[in-house]
Amino acid sequence: MVDVFDEVEEQLRSERYRSLAVKSLPWVAAAAAAVVIGVGGYWGWTSYQTGQANKASEAYQTALETAQKDGPDKAFGQFKAVADGGARGYKALALLQMGDIRVEQNKAKEAVAYFDEAAKAAPSPILGDLARLKSAFALMDTAPYKDIEARLTPLAGEKSPYRVYAKEALAFAKLQAGDLAGARGDFVVLANSLDNSSDEVRQRAQAAMQMIDSGSAKDLAAAVKAAAALPATPPALIPPGAVAAPNAAAGAPQ
Image 1 (cartoon, one colour):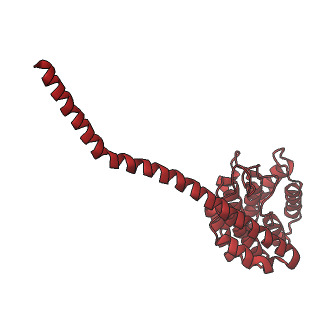
Image 2: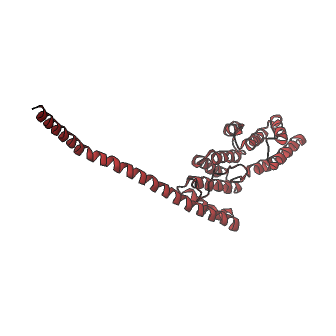
């Protein structure tokens, strides 16, 4: 009798397991489908981003060629088309170019707006800090010193790749605000600092010191404008990978 009861109990247990399996099957299948969809979605989105970056790269290069051939003003609309796209790296680069064009057109307010937008769109601190630096330079003629200082102080830290340019901008801001002694002290440091790898910065610092020593301020606006004319993407300051090539293994800037 014991054997009979054991057999019946085993059959009942098997039925319970089978019933549980049948009830669980839809959930297991759904979970498996979710994993498949998730993986497929990830690769699909990655492929989409790569395609968008490739298109943005081509459009950005075309805009650069137009700027070189026909002048920056003619290329402004092309840069805007890139900026309106979805690839963040090229969006930031295009906005930097647009800001530079507005600086050349003496439209500082618009230039600052484009630089600030580029800083928000930048996929890396390298591009973002460059945009913030250029924005501060563009504001030099109109904003009070405290506003310029607030923008530049975070960029002048010892770990910042743009610390030399930020310190130069702070010196010019002091000069603009009438703090000749403070500005001259900063220019002395810039002219003699081993941390300064730019001959142009050193030369501007020396010129500013001479201007201060001579008591002349007539060239101040020109000096500030020259300092503001930083390249959109200074190669020496941007490490490899900060803006990857469109077909690089690491992927294009997003």
